[in-house]
Image 1 (tube, rainbow, N blue to C red):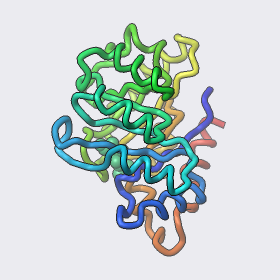
Image 2 (image 1 turned 180 degrees about the vertical axis):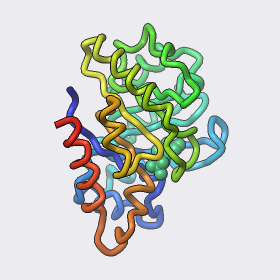
Image 3 (image 1 turned 45 degrees about the vertical axis):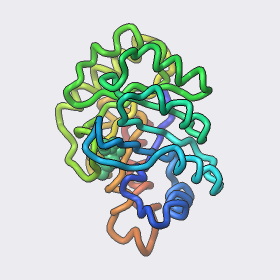
Length: 229
Ligand SMILES: O=C(CO)[C@@H](O)[C@H](O)COP(=O)(O)O
């Protein structure tokens, strides 16, 4: 069983003071930094690229940076993110002409590789590549924006993918992203997730401006621990 990871999505952070926001959320208990890259082509929104990843490393961030590429085509940008300090690079199969090749490309640049399934992407896309992956990321919203509601059918999908991973016998992480909150995280953990991306629930938590993120992150961790141990 993989240790629990809480990965705040910096999409909901204050970009005007991003370095401080990341320092603060890590000091308050986050394990990874989730870094959403949107290209206004694969998804209808535009965010940040390798320069910002590199700036966070130069700022002193040593935690794993979990890069979620919502970019098409994907291969061209992989070496840039590896050079910028990405730890894990995940991509959507719809954005790659050769999924297996993209996985190998990510690994050849020294990063871990993840495959992202949208709510409408069938789990069969994992056939023949699951053993090569370090992580499967299930989207529980359609990609492009923070602050959407968790799509309930993702729970069944999580259970299916958990079985596939367990059958593989490989140490593959199962990450969930979209609408994750302290109130639903236990149910999501029970369905099989071990890694939890949360943007608005952490960065927009009531009182976070004054008191930081420790309260919401510890509530999330306690809820998951009650399920996963
Ligand atoms: O990748 C995405 C959206 O495309 C996510 O990482 C969101 O940024 C998560 O935001 P919340 O649903 O937790 O607010």
